[in-house]
Length: 304
Image (cartoon, rainbow, N blue to C red; front, side, top):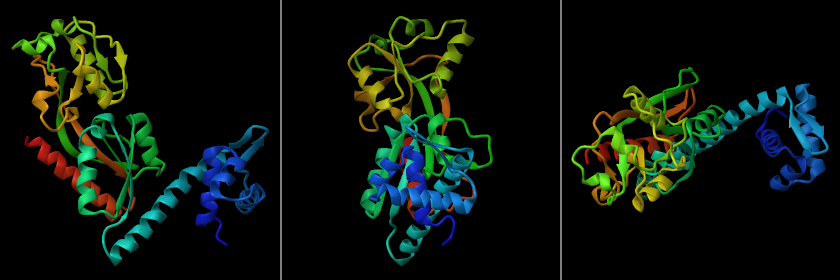
């Protein structure tokens, strides 16, 4: 038996993720002694200790952490290989796991997946919404196939980012907000109203604060902070709060009858929405198909 065959990696990762042999055995439909034996044999064959046993469960050692990082990538590549072989026999099939920023999750991603669902019904999707500090590490660990979001390009060489679309970030309000009746809005006007903003780690928030500080003004302090573009949109529709969002985050249909982009001089910034994937990773046809659908949707929306 090979040291790192698919079955052993599956057993190991279940224990690693759950930190419990009992819970992992239940998840895998194995007896606890059988799973314990599998982990013990793997440790003996690798000649290292993968877990420290404690009364509360198991704790990965440095060897366990290292193996988990590679095991996720190996299992991901194995699934992609199986999918690609199946695709060569017929229609494009497979499972795509995408990590995306909140604005993309509320705009481009639903349209792209629906478009692909109709064109290639054999593809299944898992969409994980999050911020850059959780999505990119998951990509590097092989837990997701690609990341899509408006965040800075990674400086390291283990992932590659490509431009999906360039978007504009602006101050937005509900359709009945008092500022929508003004032809020109000053920065000082914005400080008279409550704000609903993304977390400080998001680039949109940083751009907003940089603009106010550059004009010698204190940035707005949000009454509500949320990383959900959908939540922020809903909050703005029925009250006098303001936010700072990409145009792509606004509803893609009938924008003029929902949120309104306010004409604030000097407070409209361009951002880059990127698709990021692991360097040297084999990109299966299902992932290629989703990337193509995202590009088509983004280009179509940019023309509206």
